[in-house]
Image (cartoon, rainbow, N blue to C red; front, side, top):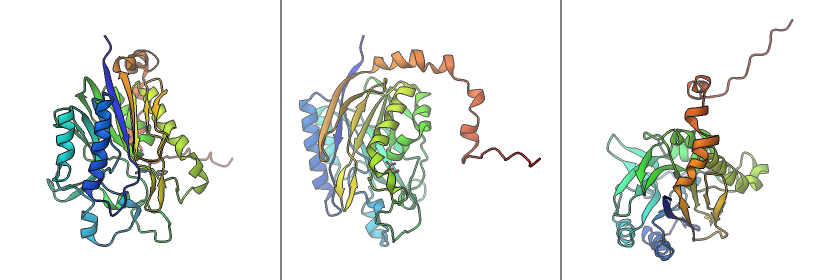
Length: 315
Ligand code: ING
């Protein structure tokens, strides 16, 4: 018997630095109503979906930095999003900047999974923080996630939700095979990923034209190599002078793209997916229990950086 679920990717266009949470959440609510009309049970919003992508700037005023973070979730402003989603019977993934005071003061790039009754059933804090921690004022676009966020204390988890095994990741995580494999080893059937990906990468400008290709390459690979659906959702367009890629996509365990955004604005993509299709892959070509040989994979967790073979001694 098929285990189908109608999933939606709620791509968002630019969020200006001056946009209020209320203005942003009204856009998200409009996408929720469209999702309801299209039968969605679960909707994925982008990474840092409540504000502009502030890690592009070196901000000196701590109060200004703190304004980008949520001290509670639901927060007073996001309560309306939770209430609307619950009223529509839609669960959602929401990326946001989390201020955590439960163990000192810590800052995370976070995503939550909210079920159709409005309950937060899962929280994920971003593992792979790209870019740099130092101020590079001569760069047109900085990428300061290592400056603003702490590394995850959750790791990659998978939750029983929406009739299947659901996992979460955030943006740069999608580029690392370890992300999908750690969830694959927990039986993940649906990986939800929000992203904010600038086209311009100051360190390799000759790769700018490859951002869209790399975006799908890594998500399609992760889906196929772990027999899981992947939903990748962008915040995109020209946001405060930094153009970010769109191409939000719903990807099948075969690696095929099932649905893809075609604009650089707020756009809902949807698909009815059958989670049982994961097992065409999980039970065959990537049957982990039958084919993996962990005794040969030790370096993956033992070693952080690459260590090339030493050159043979001169004879
Ligand atoms: N953004 C980017 C990403 O991994 C990046 C960072 C941009 C890395 C371009 C490499 C090239 O998609 C986030 N937020 O991780």
